[in-house]
Length: 378
Image 1: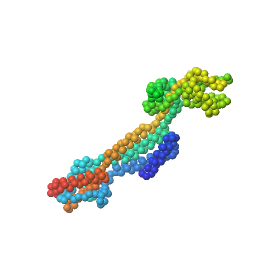
Image 2: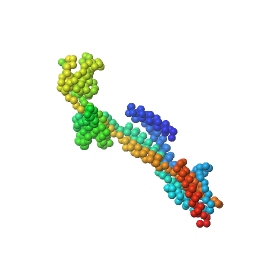
Image 3: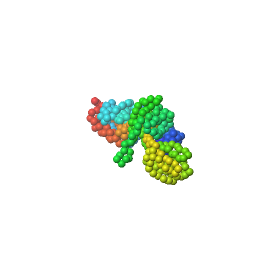
Image 4: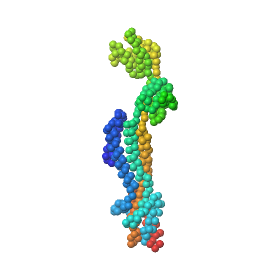
């Protein structure tokens, strides 16, 4: 288990690095450590499960080690009557009881919350599923970020996704101070160029279709325009906040945050101003005109085949925690043997706290009730 802890710490360290570089999750280091940790957890789970289901016919060691069991002798009481009395008292304390003969007499096993013993194997199995799901998602999952003009078409099938998207319209809700409150894209799913469904997506409300999720992540605007001078002209598109090279002997660059614009010369701010659409701006020997402002929507598209495995792992993790924390298993063993003076009893419990309390209750009941109710002559 110490090896598993070391591997887990190493895997956590790689995951932290992966927050800055997603490629780490498909690196040989990550896959190798994940594989070793998975094998370690599977081996530990198999061993624990084998011990749980193993039918051991021997007398538990706690009943054979001085100082670990309680002892009592019931004078003038037959073993059969003592067995019936002990079984009745254990059932009264909520235990499921089994009795079998042993070399020393009769061994009674009382179990309570036996499902709690599955807590540890389930926790190990849950970690295995989470690791496997993460590896499956890293190896066979697919994701991409796209900025689509509105209206416009996104050819996702070219990147291996099962459908394309048509962006019908886009809307931004704002607060009174002008800051964005929510932004929404209206999408149409296309299969073989035929519309299938229409959905509106917004932040935290993605489209989920055929195992592919489409998230609304950002938005912005694109400025279309033209640069004209006496010798040549060209059209351009530039996102607001980004620069575009427009040429000239001083290496002019244009940055637009419409209606404001800023011109750089050799990387240094040169001039700035405000321009409306279709308004000509004189710049040295050239003329710049902004002809259109088009919104675009930023979409995060991804598919993760390992996600169902991860969810199953988290469900098992929750079940395992509940079983381990709230269904603490307890076992009480009672060994009864015939002696000349009566029936000798050895009693031990598996649970260190609750088991000892219930063992003390059982000893008190056996010592107080049985002598009055059973004797060799009855």
